[in-house]
Amino acid sequence: MAFGRFQDFLSGLVKRQRQFFFAGDSENLTVDELLDKLMANTGEVSAIVTARELLNHYNASDDDEKLAFFENLEQNFNADQEAVRKAYHLYDNEPNSLHLNQLSRVTEPLRQELLRRLNQTPGATSDLVSMRADLLRQLKLRPELNSLDDDFVRLFSSWFSRGFLILKTIDWSTSAAILERIIRYEAVHEILDWDDLRRRIDPDNRRCFAFFHPALVDEPLIFVEVALSRQIPESINEILKDDGQADDSDFDTACFYSISNCQPGLKNISFGNFLIKQVVQELQSEFPGMNQFVTLSPMPGLCCWLEDDKVKHNEQLQPLITELAAIPKTEGGVKQNSELIRRLAATYLLLAKKNNYPLDPVARFHLGNGAGVHAVKEAADLSAKGLEQSRGTMVNYMYDLKHIERNHEQYISEGIIQHSDKLKSLISKLKE
Image (cartoon, rainbow, N blue to C red; front, top):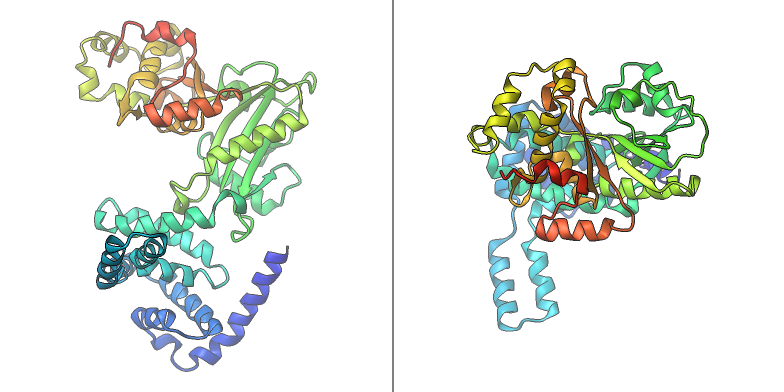
């Protein structure tokens, strides 16, 4: 609350001071002039007002103007090359901590200080997150802007570090503004309406948790939906159509069935590993007998992988893929060929890799957090989306609390994927 009151005070101050600092010329100042004014040694209040004016100007720009803004930052707000050379020679001739710190300071691009100054004004953090979302849309066609994106990532990793994140339980008493955003941001299993949302967060055997940041009011960063039970669910339909009438509250299993990142501008800023670990702690506190923590996760890249020419021509996989190609992507086709689909899904999860890590993005997320592959669930998502992207197959990643750190270290350092023994038979005769 104190942070919010300070932001309100600062917002009022900015409004009162804008006329004073920009009287008569606010609309005439160009972006370059605003940048010069912000980076000059002006007073603190003037800098805050200028930052807001610059952000407003950016927000009103079209895509071409935004691209020009990014190109300007990339080209003209770098480190001072002469200062870098001098600091490097100083450190090279006399390597010590003092000279190393000086070298570190001068190698920082000037645009990082610009972004920090922009962030002084009320509401700026949200504006800058949106600004990075704009930048990400440009990167495929403008790879030279990756250096600018690196600066955003470096600053956001600090601004959104674990110490600033607030975990909140989302339930039916949560504000309507936040609940509306949960509906809108759900990225795994669409929430159809308010009744559907209530089925997911209100019953005794359901939980929803989200991370928030003080600078983004009522804006979740990431949230997870959890089903509580005494066994691992076999399908997503079993979870989503549950009426919530649990037999008792003696749950021993928590299934994380949907994890959604909410802010595109915070892509590659890690929240999920912190979220899951803290949610596990919350659930164990509420249910001391809970000892099984699993996911029911999609495999969004399975069918794309099966259609890759290199995979199709793999000598061992080709007969299986040819057989699968003749099977319709329907509920009946999946259920009648479950063993074939399970074998190919297990091969994809455990053997299909790029740079020593799994191709599947969801697998990379959970395995990087220290989970292991527990089971492949055929006919687990018979929705049109599930059939199209993974032939209806889903996967359980198991978070074994005794081995999370070991699994994480082995995965990061060696690419080792921990998996249950029952999966070994599915891939024993296959090599990608």
